[in-house]
Amino acid sequence: MVNGKCEIAVNRIKVYAYHGVSQQERIVGADFYVTVNALVDVEPSAWRDDQLDGTADYSRFVGIVRKEMAVPSNLLEHVAARIGSSILAACPSVLKVSVIIEKENPPLGVLCDGVSVKFEQKR
Image (cartoon, rainbow, N blue to C red; front, side, top):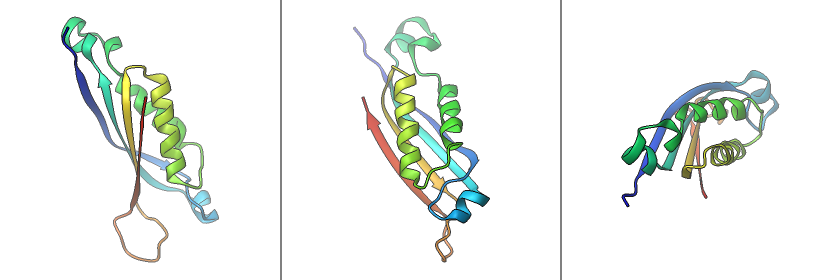
C-alpha cells in the first residue's frame, strides 16, 4: 500500500476584523492576514481516484477562517486556536494544522510591519 501526505497551504487570507485588547481596536477594527497550513492524508485522492473527498477541500479552510475571524476576541491566540480546532473538526483527513494570524497595524507606539501569532494543533 502506498501512503501519501501533503501539505496544503492557503496563504494570507485578508480579513477585516475586530480583535484586540483595547476598546478602540474592537470598535475600529483592522486588516488581518490568516495563513492556514495543513498536513493532510491524501492517499485516496493522490494514488487512486483523483477525487476531492479523498483530501481536504481548502475552500472549507477559507469559510472557517471567515467565520471565526468574524467573532471579536481579545487575543489572536484565541482566534487561531478556534480556527485550528474548527478545521480539525470539519476535515477528517487533516492530521495537523498550523494557523498564522498577522495584524498589520498593532497599537504599539512604534513603527513595525505588524505582529503575528502561530498556533499548531494535531489530531
